[in-house]
Image 1 (spheres, rainbow, N blue to C red):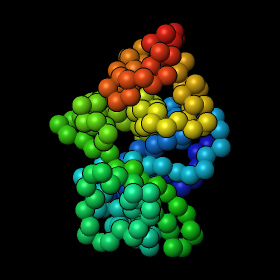
Image 2: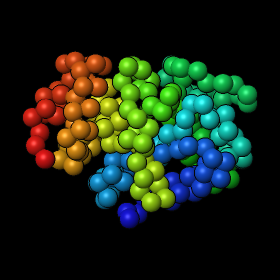
Image 3: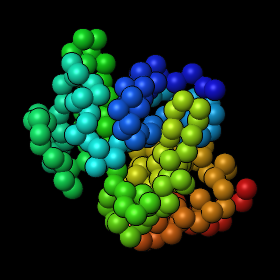
Image 4: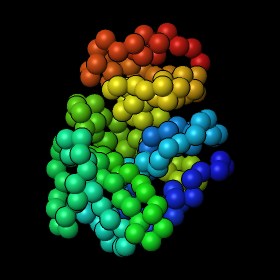
Length: 195
């Protein structure tokens, strides 16, 4: 097991105690999939299901919550339900100043749904994988999110992960990119990559 940010199991334990479904996202999810830390991480991103997001306050008393809205952070007021396109909650502990970013993911009828195009979906057991105490979002989903405007770290995550993706995962990601960004340069790479 790799040495992950200690905030991940701490928050995960609080979420699990209330039966809130969660998973590690972003670069940490890639590292959990690969079984090694590949680069420094600036933050901790966790996925929670949109239909459970209002339970975050109960799971994390003493934390302050903000939502990202049109590129700005604003307070997330109690009892406010976050509907699409809102999907990003920033949480900060008032005690030790720990911070985590929660990304709301959608699910329906046993399927994970891509918020940018609900025609892109994956069965829940394939969408959230398990690394012992830390479930994580499947790498093909993480890479799909990272594909929108890939930064240097996103490109590194793609190239580190590509040799380890199954044929099905590579095919799924290439098809998802074809639906959402038909001219994306990763499509050709995915279609020609060999394990």
